Amino acid sequence: MVVNGTEVTVKGIPEMSEKEITNYISYVADKTQEPVDRISIVCRPDGTVSLDYQLRPQKFERIRRITGYLVGTIDRWNDAKRAEEHDRVKHGLH
Image: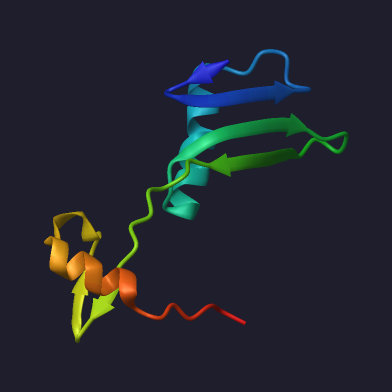
């Protein structure tokens, strides 16, 4: 089932309300400070609840440091600056 855009799986708790599910989603989101993509709520034999979750992927923007300035993507650069970047020696991580 999907609750507030989050895919939810509930096992071992036959009649869990949507409000309870929303509270578990909010609990994880508050603890991680990230939006929750999927959550599995499982009742253990000892009566405790196990939460297994996956956070929503976040966008990543590469930042380059060029001559002391931080710049984002090179799509706004002119042809000369793009050629300069293309000709640079790239160093890999070891």
